Image (cartoon, rainbow, N blue to C red; front, side, top):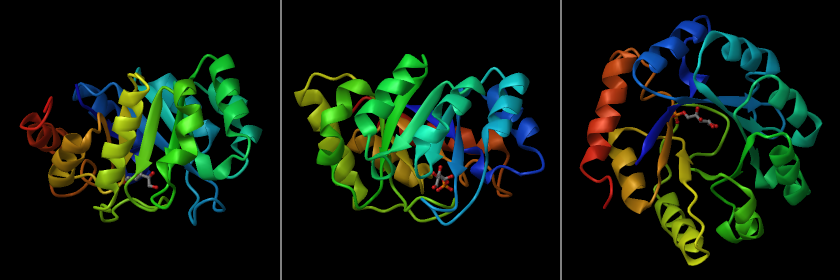
Length: 223
Ligand code: DX5
C-alpha cells in the first residue's frame, strides 16, 4: 500500500493549520514537517513551536524531517513537541547509530534520509534501526524543484538491499513528486511519497491534487 505524505513546506505559510486540516479531510494520516537550519541546507523554515501547534490542532501524524546539522541538540525537544517520527540525515550525523538509538528510546519512529549524492551503503549498517529510509529525489532545501531521475535506480537498489536483509521497511521519496514521477517512484519500489508543490498549488484544490496523485499510482501499485 503506497501512502501519500503532504509536505507542508509548500502550504500557505499564513494558513498552515487550515491546510493541515484540509489534507486530514482527504484521508491523509501523516504530514511531513521540513525543518531547515540555514546550514545543512540554504534555507530556514520551521521549529518545535510549529510541531507543538500542529499537535494540538490535528490528529495527523507528524513526520519531522530534520535538515539540520547536529540534530542531536534538538531531538528530545522535537519529540516532546509531539513528533511521531523523526527523520535525520546521514550526512548531518557523524554519530548516526547512537542518534537513531536515542530516537527509539524517546518512543518516536526513526528515519534516515540520504541526499542525491550519498550512496546507499552509507546507511546499510543502520537499516535495522530505522522505521523508514528516505531517498531525497531533489537536493534538499526548497519545494518545487525537478525530480532527479537518476535516483530511481537508487530506490530500486535500496529496496533490494532491504529485501536481501529481510527487512520489511518502507522506502520514502521526497522531492519533485507529481503524478508522473509518483508512478515512476512506486514502480522503482517507493511506498511513501512525500509531495509538496503538487498538492499545495493554485492549479487545483488540495483534494483534487491528492486524487490526481492517487489515480496516477493506482495503475502501478503492487507491481
Ligand atoms: C525539500 C523538502 C521536500 C519538499 C518537497 O528539501 O524536503 O519535502 O518540500 O516539495 P516538492 O514536492 O515541491 O518537491
